Length: 316
Image 1 (spheres, rainbow, N blue to C red):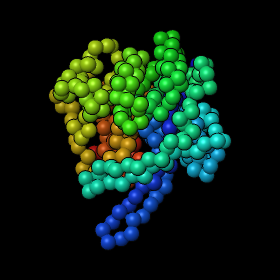
Image 2 (cartoon, one colour):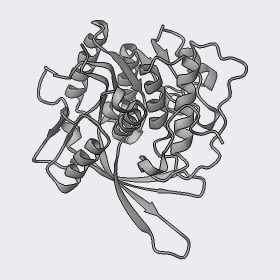
Image 3 (tube, helix red, strand yellow):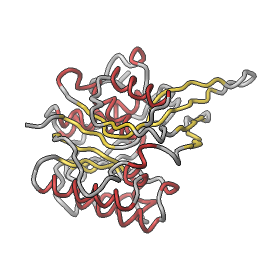
Image 4 (cartoon, rainbow, N blue to C red):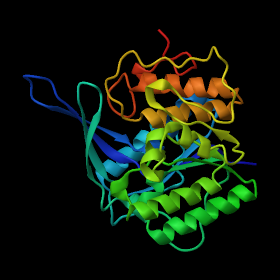
């Protein structure tokens, strides 16, 4: 019997949102965010009491770490897989956006407690879950030894059908030792994953695909349990799914902040998958949720700004 529907693995940080208005002093809002954390939060909001979602990470014993734990609990996440490292703290990042909603980030994460995940030895004790989800950022922040241990654990768990491994390559060059290491590691991760959630931009940047069609064709090479390739405002494609001619993914009507667009898509898609929805409905749920999220500011919208998390959330 699985303990969780979704186990999301990675780093959460303190998010400082810089709100700039012409002629006014810059205002700052502090929240909690991180790619796999964002996905966990939005997935839990969709599943509600019918789904158990856990976040696996490490935090410190500072005030921001305490707020992270409190925020996760308020969102209904299981925090039993979050360990406390008294010698470290959580990372911090600031984000500001331009008039088109594009982001500019500054990070302070070198001493992040999450960077010590899986560094204790060869044994990993992760709980059973229907889906175990991680990203390229999760892998990038780990030490090479911890990265290898995690990959081996996930490979064995997937082969034993103990979990479905879901992965988003989410390539951030500055976090990796080199582009070569990133490419080799993410390629290995794609060989392990059961559910593929890449974006065209990340894959082309890392693997040098000549075109979007080339990227999509690479994901036809194996029989995924599920696969959704993100293409931003043009909507996702699933290389194993024959799209009906009536399928449309309208672009978001209002773009304020594109932070967590891909994370929220993954949440909607995985929630639909866990609920047993058809592939088209999973794709639509993910796209609509992302459109709703980028119409607000910050990675995680306040609950009162997000009354509808269903498939039609972004329809006018």
